[in-house]
Image 1: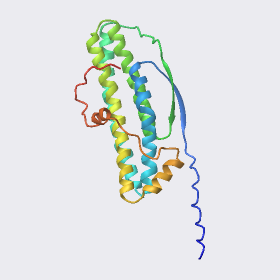
Image 2: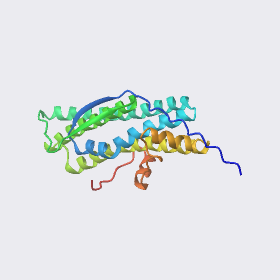
Image 3: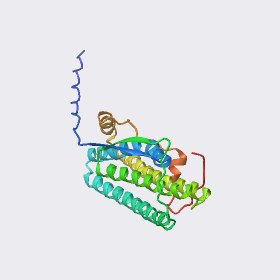
Length: 224
């Protein structure tokens, strides 16, 4: 009986040394803190995973396309935030308000910038925080009502969360496409070696439904 020849061990891939910035910011508003807590880390992982997966299956042009789409979506959201911030700042000036509130529990946010898209989203979070500060100022000074302020806070928070969920969904689709093309084991190993989970992040039914909502949808008030 012939002995089975030992199978050669697969060559271990060398970890890639990637550039990264670490930047520390103070975040004041509860809405921006929630976006960081609920969406930021998952978004970082998804953008990195998309890059890993699509380059494995030889689709670098798709990586460039997705990066462009993500950048455009973030830029559009930033423009909307800036327009609303400018409108509220004018309202603040028209009412002769010079005060700015302090916050009881600000958080220190250490952002790990591993791609230009992550840098864009971090700036989006900071812009949301600035918008919330102006909005809270107008509320404390009785220029806008409590009901309006609660609804507006939630609406802007959910805009950023919807955007992050759309990007996570892109990762899930890229992952499924790689498996469908026969690259499943290669993708699984690459995800492990890159410090990612074997499977992409899963969205809850509620989060998944947000992906298909348009920014013009009215947000209902719910408990945070």
